[in-house]
Length: 138
Image (cartoon, rainbow, N blue to C red; front, side, top):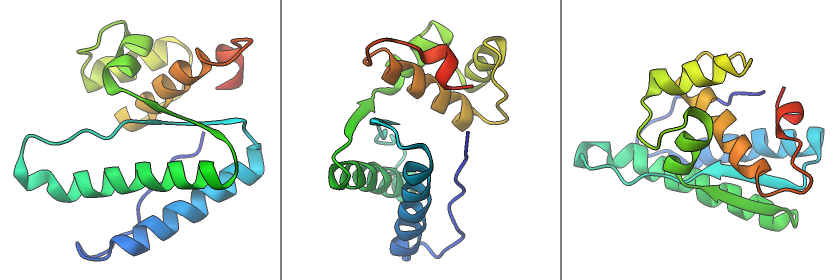
């Protein structure tokens, strides 16, 4: 698994982050040659102070869809509650529960974002025939 860390940039410099994300995603797609790209659907924050994070999240989602389209890859957007149910068994699972569920399945995760990625992978693999999800993610 490869965790991407957004570069530090000013609040106004979204372009740098989207550019760096594109380079990272293109590198992974070249390396692994998947037939499907999946991502967790961005969430609209309830707190107006989180608008910056929402703008980034929706931008990353759009970049993912654009790159998948350009490469003619199937692209799946996975709703966060579906991801939680698939990994932890509850659509209301908290961050710690997601991490614990991933670890119980044998995955090495350090953050809730990595646990969420495992859940996204499991949801995506549920849409692929034949389902071989437990083997592919390790």
